[in-house]
Image (tube, rainbow, N blue to C red; front, top):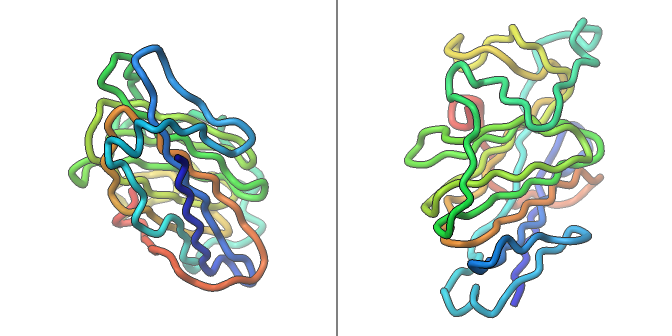
Length: 210
């Protein structure tokens, strides 16, 4: 049985961000992937007591300090790029029977830098272009997803008080989901920017998300 959560939040100016989150189980014969923004669930997910009981998604606008005519305004990285590999390393894969996945689909009008944390440490991260998707894989365990939205990637922009470099120059916002327990499951996020709506999410900030 598939479980889906919707949450809405304030975005930049009149934009509101929502995120549809779905979860599914996979068996030892391989991964079960979603189709048309829906994940095919199995009864085993319910049998394993794997449920969603928290809000999903996420964005709180923050003030953009750099001007809109910044030379990096049109700069974008490729989906799957790891701009913070100097600090967090590159993404490794997991393909045995004790693995889970997190799949993120981005909105059509915003690039997203996703970080995945375990025990408050970034263990996976990836840049995902607007209207694209990327899938992380890792050993079973407890993980938390953070989302950094924006436009125009500046590789020299200082973040976290200069601790790391790389960030968006316009339309920045940060958000997060609650920590999730993943055991032979796929957790799927579909991020959507849409006008109007109510705020009911978990905001975040650069210090927490990066």
